[in-house]
Image 1 (cartoon, one colour):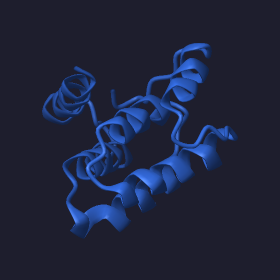
Image 2 (cartoon, rainbow, N blue to C red):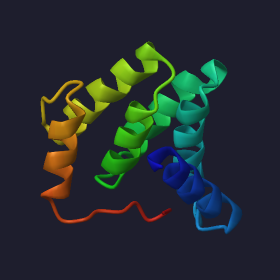
Image 3 (tube, one colour):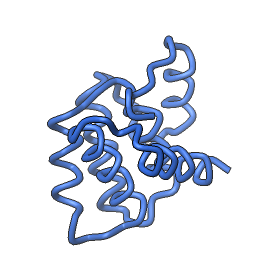
Amino acid sequence: MRLRSLWLILLIGWRAGLAATPDNEQVINAFMQLLIGNEAYTEQAFATLEREWDPGFVAMSLDVVATGRSSERTARLITLLEAETGQAFGYDMAKWYEWLWNRPEQKHPAC
């Protein structure tokens, strides 16, 4: 269900032109590349997320981690989440979601 929700958010944002700036479009594309698993764009996707990081990325990142097809991408995304949030939950998704749900909602402008 979460994967369907993430796909829908990303697809609607992309199709509806909600990615009003080039940076937002790059972020949406980065999450799509990580979700799809296109290895050719993995480095570019992570560079975009690191450069454009926003607290609104946490929920989308957790959805990609939960549906991860690559242990390498999942590990890198967990490392990025920990670095950007200051949390050290590793692969404990329950702790990540508990932390996220107990914070004020933060959506990325593109979503």
